[in-house]
Length: 132
Length: 132
Length: 132
Length: 132
Image 1: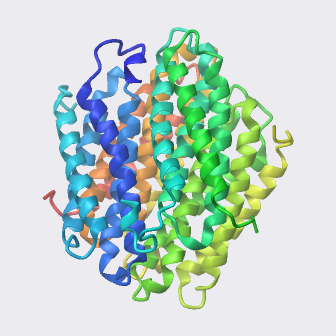
Image 2: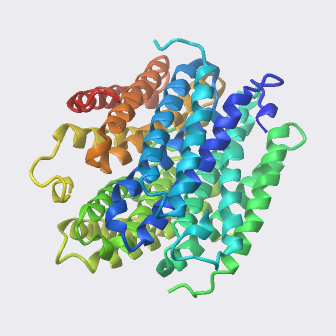
């Protein structure tokens, strides 16, 4: 789809495309993990996980939207948002990893967050302009 | 992932899962179509397409979030949101279909919207409770 | 601000403007109520409230965005979204009202949801085109 | 409303509350500016403004959501998001400021972005923990 964009034609940043896909996928998994945590008997122990799931989902969705809306001139903002997404995914993964033994949804979510963290870090590294 | 949810365990609504996936996919394509339209020389002829792309993307994302956050007791709201998503996808598809001869991104977006419209309609039909 | 829009100039739909403001306000209060519920000792009794807070916040934000992005030709979709928002606010208010004696944040949130429900219902009624 | 949160009780971060309010307000104005730009005859000259309006609106909404969902332990993420919002508002303001002579909506949007930039910068400065 991206390759049909008039500003792109033939020079798709594959790394950014992977980041868009990973971010949508991670947002979906975080939304599901948040709701699954809410449904657990031990929800009291999972409140921080729920918060970080919600934060991570929101940040992933905005990152994907920004990256999809790729205007040449504000790549610094896309880079910054990708870096913010890296941090959100890492924070969510650290929290989910505390619960992997008890909750399969946290295990899957942690993995998805780590994957998205990695893919967004790579995409950010392809955007060269130094911050202003 | 959905099957790990404590309230679900073994009785996943496959139709709803397909709707979640379709809605995220459709949102991504609509975001890209909106930006590709903005980059076209003839953007003036595509402003309504851009608006409906943005509306459809927003509605798809909220629908996916709601469906992922499936609490047993407000299925009426999920059903309503799926029906709203059906309408948004149809509206966006109708507009994109006007531009398929000139813009490949509109052709792909129209197809994606029609697919999401269909999948969300099916998912809505699986939710039985009559509106209150 | 709305009055500066080229398609509006002098004929602002005041009812719709009030709906936009109410929806942003309601989204903010719902976000705060959700997090305050998460922080309560009795979070286990508030999980449905948290879910409906999140649903209502998401739907309010999309409704506000759609209404702000007022293109003449898809008023049916704005009307539909306003009606969906009315339902989300009502559902969230019903749930919050169960907890008003114990939680001040639920009391404020219920009031805000009822107000947004009313304002969005009025705005929807000003949009005349029958559904297609 | 924030003062009713169990984790807050009496020690509201006023600066953060102002940032939440400013971010919702800025998102609303950016949405309206984007659509007003789309409606201008000279939309071709405003495409970058539309993109930055959309980016800024999305980032403001997520920032407000994160700040409203204030869990003690991930303040670093709130700080990072506030800083990202400062950058998005500044970028959008710079672009809007190019069009203030021709478009009143760009003038208002530029002012709102500058205000939100300032308020979010102040709020970020109140969050002390160094990045991990």
